[in-house]
Image (tube, rainbow over all chains, first blue to last red; front, side, top):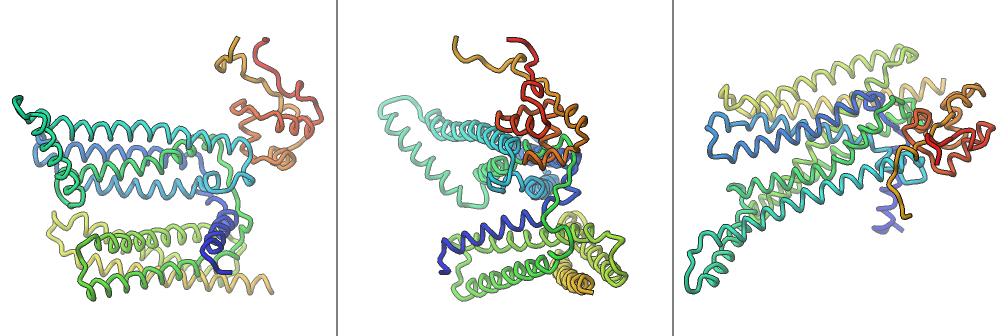
Length: 359
Length: 77
């Protein structure tokens, strides 16, 4: 029966099968790359945190405080390094115990335990800081005298309500707490991976999947089109309901945020998968026809990378160079069209490989 | 006396590499025989990972020797 638990079980089995089939990409299994990713993940989160602290400091001049661009770059580095680390270490972090040996299990448990210890302390420190701020700031403000206890309670209540109200607003100092919460979540997710990547980087061994040939290419293209279809349907529903019910407020922004986040994920997933496919297809034993299609794939991928870089350029320098941001949407659309073309080529290569193997 | 923290004397000297090369086995072959990942053999040979008793016994069996021959404590108790 196609019940929810069965679907979840199927989803987990598919994921497991995918990890076992694909193995770890050669590039991400290099010790230097693993350690570099670990360093970038930690450094970029510290840079993001530092830019937040500088931005909230009233002693610092406005020129020095405008570190938005650095924060955007550091945040992007955080996201990219985390995703790559996740792929690099997913064998150890995601496979069930029976697929790992005792050293890998010990390393995995050590990394998650250490990550938990760090998060526990940082989380406690932040919570105490916030509680201290809430409790003591009204206490200091209230003058001593008759009824000062009641006044203090009144101020505390006001202060608490004020903070809760600010938590849901997009401006105000509490927005920085949202950033800190985001960083904390990031550390919770990425720190065990950083520790594992560092420890597992003593020697470079390519962990091959069960099928190192091109038989998975067809499956890969199907996965992309399925993901893209989800983005389109989700987007259509989001926009349609936005205009039908005019519910732009009341938390609806989170639906749009989820849609955009998923779209961005699919975009980067496509870049990563196309890059690894191009590397995997660097095989001189492939037939001349497949090599020709690979060249077309490389050209389309390079063009999509240029359009992608142009999006970043427009957003990064829009203010400085007085640029209109509309072309960025055009470049984004062009990139997606190019990705569709690239995956159509990937599918074609899969058919050609299958036909070559039959002959 | 109660439980003591891990010390240098708890560290092991191992002869896995010499036994393996004597038998002409590659790391991959040994890893496949004892059912661990290739990297794990490297970690054990460099002394960066002390195997469990079960794995030590499997290694000894695969290398045709006893566990005492394969692993010895760095310092005498």
